[in-house]
Length: 473
Image 1 (tube, rainbow, N blue to C red):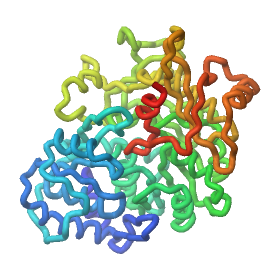
Image 2 (cartoon, one colour):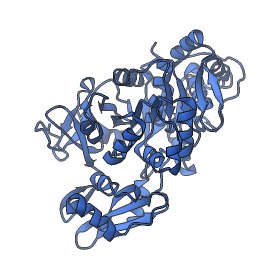
Image 3 (cartoon, rainbow, N blue to C red):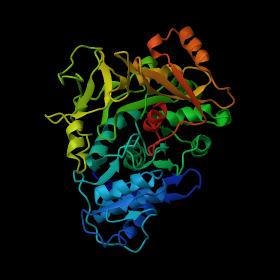
């Protein structure tokens, strides 16, 4: 089985009445038979489009969006995934730049089976965007083969079975959502719970109701779940694994999640573009599992490159830019030579936007982003490390650190924080006293502090750093 159409057809034959998808809030569900049949009946609506045409989908996360994606695959049409929260300017950019023939905000009508011109596993299957934290997003080209490869990396780590119940709290159009909702559950023959809109209490309730075993959530989301006063009232004992990432995983909160649920907190380090470069496993010691991004994946041939010269870094512990070349990579950015020139090295290795180290045992640790470094008086300060330190304060729910312009030092560290429910706003003096008590180096102490009711989010659910940088300026 090399395409989702083939996988769904297999599941429809083997377990036709088993639920494939259920929406957490409404309870709307779709069996494997319904998934296969509904998607085929949608292809009649798509008959007006030629093979290879693009159709943009801005459909709320639920069974319908997955049926629509499968209908496009069966009809030989390249779907353009648009986040449900994307603004009109972003939507217009994605539709125009991708050449989409139309934008659908509801699943196609079931008009009867149309022509089936299925897309092969190595052909362009899907276009989606970077999460849009700054400026207009770039458009990423996907094959199905890369996500089948990703599943092949994940299965030995998580040992998925048809008895698992996934809950993917991620927006379906983005990479993390694709593998945890559209691919791995289907390949495993497992039910997947999806959320039209993320709400921490809703997800907690769904875990209990559906006895979820595999949860997928970005760091911001699982921290919001931990911060919910209602968490103590739910039975979360069914969970065995939570996959997280997308942002730096805060050690203290991840440990708290493990202690509270008994689940292993795991991550695949990578991006919408690279797929997976490293991963943590249940067998890793907790310190390694929660403080690093795990061992590099051999099949992805990971290298670290000097950020200035591009030379290979072979000294353990020395930071560099991760680069990979393997089966989980995307095809690059659609119709964007300038962006591709930055994404790939001249010899074809795909670059991350991070700075990372790799130790003697092959564990990769993210120490910052090449674009997320605060340069204070000539010293590089990792915003990710500042965020991890500030998030250790018991009253802080979420933190995002950005550079604030300064006439003397060039930049100073500015922290935007969101407080836990019921906690008084923390002051800069309070925060510094906490960090001093923890022995945190003074270069990681914020020099400016802004308390917000809620940190702004991008269409991909991550903290919108671009908006915060504008405020800091």
